[in-house]
Amino acid sequence: MGYRVAVIGATGNVGREMLAILAEREFPADEVVALASKQSVGKEVSYGEDDVLRVHDLESFDFRGWDLALSSPGAKISAVHAPRAAQAGCVVIDNTSQFRMDPDVPLVVPEVNPEALATYEARGIVANPNCSTIQMVLALKPLHDLAAIRRVVVATYQSVSGAGREGMDELFTQTRGIYVNDPINKEKFTKQIAFNVIPHIDMFMDDGSTKEEWKMVVETKKILDPRILVTATCVRVPVFIGHAEAVNVEFEAPISTEEARAALRRYPGVSVVDHRMDEGYVTPVESAGEDLVYVSRIREDPTVENGLNLWVVSDNLRKGAALNAVQIAESLVRDYLSVPA
Image 1 (cartoon, rainbow, N blue to C red):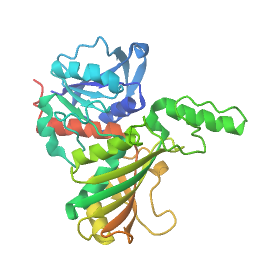
Image 2: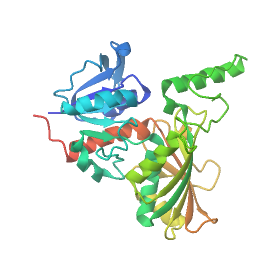
Image 3: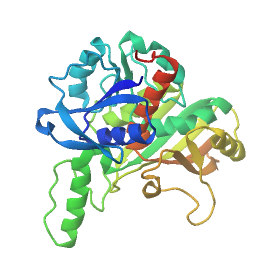
Image 4: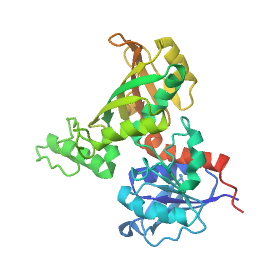
């Protein structure tokens, strides 16, 4: 027997990727249901290459008898429906920011801290980290195992798909408009995104940081090590899919570029593409549709003691969101959940 799986927010960018990846990886599901808001009820979404699912209303859906829910409907909606599903006995893997810093909710990247799943029953909810955090901690973990990380300085270059379909549409519309002299309309982003970069993702906080930057700090500490100091600058760039990060790392002990490359090459989920020549690195365009986190431009930082620089790239819709959620589901099924009768 297989599992009964609900995908919440099935019509969004991440929800569609969740459905695609469940099918690609042949997740042991006997039944999959697509859930979204009332406005989407009756629409059709793809599940794999051949199957089509009709969208059902999340508001009225009864989660009793369902085993797992992969959820990406927005934080406010998750705040209502994730606990409701968990109370009905359905384990929720939530991709929103709503539960990430709840001490009773594990925040998990399966390659990095799978042991955290042992506490999933406290709330019946597992949190999927922020997309920019996932790819960074996956690159940092094998290095942290070699020599403890003291401090991380990261600048992100985040694609518009991280802001949903509306963000992708706005980049397309503005780009086309510039070529035909149409006025620039800003709806999703605070400034023009076409042919521009915007150092502002999510709301501003009292200390001048944005909430996206705060997420990278606190989530890295929760997943990897609370002693690591992290400072981030998060920037939206005119790229459709794929986040990139320039990461500067200070270690408590020396670590050479050769040792770093070897450790990263051995680590699951990571690919090292680091050739000191033209095209000897990975860019966001090349990461789109791929499952790995790519690390390039590995080099020593001579301005600090025990410092390295890294260039880290990944598809934010896949490993940064949907794939990580499916991998969490696979880990739960393998190690914690009983096979349905």
